[in-house]
Length: 257
Image (tube, rainbow, N blue to C red; front, top):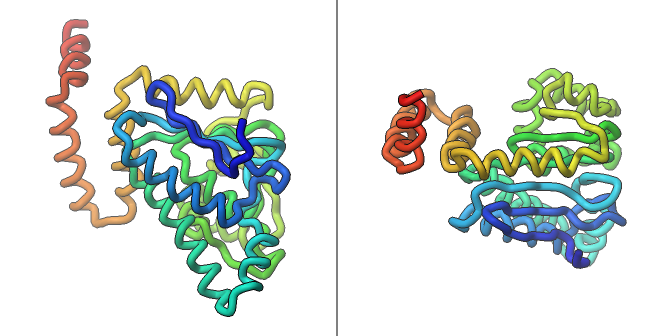
């Protein structure tokens, strides 16, 4: 393990992305934000990356932005508003790049998730949480508003009313409540978290990886465009998938059975 703010490795088609500021509950500072943006583009652009495992070091998953680091940075700049917006834009570019990529992402989530940490988590396509994980907004505690995609990703995951409840109150969800709300896909014992997330990622690598990736891309992009555009994209994508060697072999095997 290095002391870098985000760890990144690619092995046998699996990109492993780890938030690595445990002393700050993995809150992201300007250095971590720059790495997030860089690694997001690398994941999207590398042909050898076929799936992504996203996790975090220490007792928390992510507390969002490092408010102390950002306040120090902004305080040393004459235009603090521009500085904060630029940092948010970098995070958002990384989020958009991962969300739009044809690479399925599984997140392993432990401990507290707060503020923008919800947005980082919800970039993943499947989320496995440890039993002790908790989920809260907390933006209003420092008189801030949602960023990191939370205003879009949270209502997409749990619905508008529940998203408003979480962002407009001090409510903290337990892992069981997050599962009930649809915020996470599974809840497992803490000692089983890493293995379960890796098992999901491995199933993508061992299956029809390209098809999983394209399915993720279609579902993620479908809500943000006219229905006909989504239908046209589906038609093009399934036609291209049908003629791949992998699909032809699997279809032939299915027909034989």
